[in-house]
Length: 198
Ligand SMILES: [Fe+2]
Image (cartoon, rainbow, N blue to C red; front, side):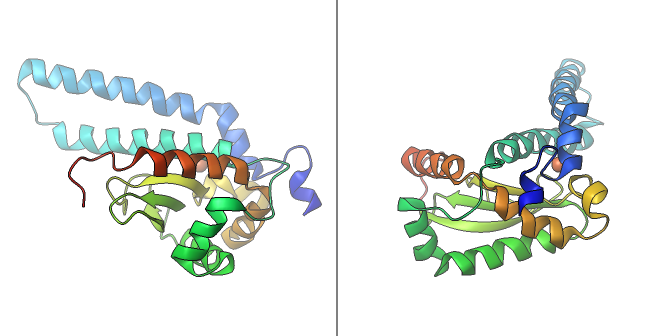
């Protein structure tokens, strides 16, 4: 859609959010949390450990997912992948349309805030769709996200009000398949990051 490719595209709010420093806030919180954990170790006082660990996972995962998200999108994106990524999608989902239907639905139906994610799963050596809650729930350990759709309200509410599905449908017009393919190729070539998987 032409409007999505105009200056100020895509999901305006998410872009605005980027400039407001969401990623910087996440990374500065990560350092602050690591300092908090070091302090807890020094004191031998782990009363706040559960909270610190949870917030650390939240901010680490949020930073990773937002970093991938910005690179997954391009004003020149859209269409479909080709080559080995297209073949893998056909093999693991049946067809591109079947994959897109599952990924769209996973993104649209996240309860509360979260993400729809296409990930390389090294245990099975295959692509899977994950429906991530917040930034860090419902994640398969060891899987590598290669295409992510932000389903947090801040990603769409200015441009799309409360109609998350419209935003998700239009995101497909912006997917930079070259970036997704590079992530797929690297994840598959790296093999399992966790030794002993079989
Ligand atoms: Fe976001």
